[in-house]
Length: 485
Image 1: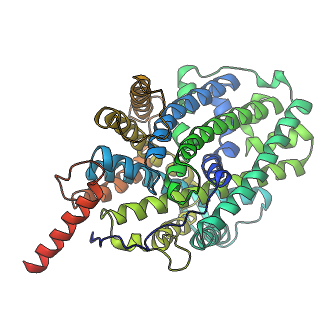
Image 2: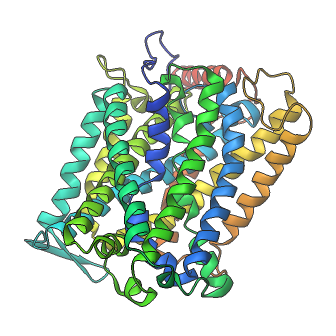
Image 3: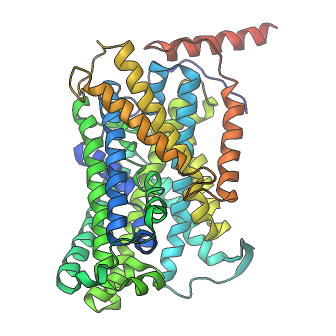
């Protein structure tokens, strides 16, 4: 893969068309994907009702601390690419590439996850969906009609994003509102038809059960960082963009805690453990109606679409920014001449999501597990660069300064590093939530490609506000030397 980059042209810019609600809907909707529908039963079975709630609150607190570092950096550098720009300024191009590659990999795995989750959910509504058998993957028979549901949706969602970020933002807001209505219905049903007795046992599985829930936190909460990715397209003050990052994390934490409590109140733990899709079955039990279970599934589909849409947007902006800085081929930096969207980056990710459903349901777990460590690596690097910039550039313009002007901000940054390192350790062999071989294989393949691209980036480019310009100049000189050599 040839890495080249021309100097940015004046019209190579994104459009500032998103408002407060658009940005918040992108961040919140990215986090509330499909996991709350299919994984809640497993959380309750692993840790008990309050064990799962405690894990979610812990995870929300960790992500909240990380979100504070993002909030300050996003307000200071409101430019497409988020982590890419933070790390470029504070740690230089190669570290910027590592962090950007990590979060891009996490985003792409979740986009692919949603493409597989959609037909998995649709089959709950249409039991005869699976027709025309194709092949088996990990013991699961893949059917053409089943896979096409996800593949066609990939075409539609990618097309919407190509047609403009404002259209994608409007679609996101509409679906998020529908999702919130479903959540309110679930809460109402829990108060009127639920039982506190059903929530027992409150704790089970000990620390192993607790960590089994905690380990999915990066997957569940990834998405608040879509707000930084789209910040170049948000037409609101930089300080407000930073605040929205933290608000999105708080809202997602409330959502996941609500899902655990309402689901556990609907049925005894034994029935939840045997349920196909526990949250949907819980909705049906609360109202004594199969129709209400189907409505909940509709909410799950809404979650799939919001997460898919947001993370496709975020991943494409990251790839666009990396290409604009010379870290990826210029092909990824191409903007649509009419809609000013990164069309080639969107097409690349769209093709991957189109293919994913043809690998069957087994891909769901593999994608969740393979993307999570990369996401945490990116969070660690952002927290590190937050601390570095606080020390190296104390006078940098920070429209939103978390922790005040003293050492409070440094405490937040160090805490974010330590908490994320602890989270990363949970995936390692020997830990309660250690990953199985297939996710490690997917993780390894992504990073092998990343290492190949990493060493094409010139070394010795100093971090700072001019790092991108210096990198582009080095790449231009390298190309000239090759032509003259």
